Amino acid sequence: MEVKIRLFAFLQDQLGPSITVEVTNPVRIKSLLNQISQQAPQLSSTLANSRLAVNQEFINDEEVILKVNDEIAIIPPVSGG
Image (cartoon, rainbow, N blue to C red):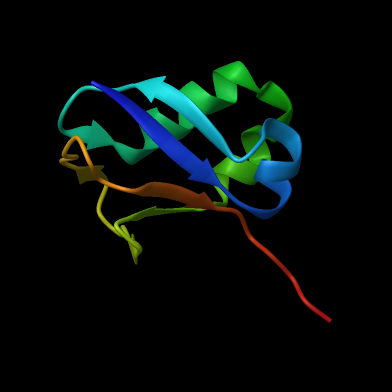
């Protein structure tokens, strides 16, 4: 299944507003982030510290079952001042 993942902050600056990847269900979060890391190796450390959200809820599990219309987002660590 092909899914579109919305990106934010530093990830969006580097890759644009979204990226599309091919996944199988259930999706291992680590595997999903590794797929993106292969496309953009310079972002590996940022992705390793990022959070995944599905339908605007953070995922804490190691695996998730996605549906076709799920909204998926990767939120990198941010800091403020």
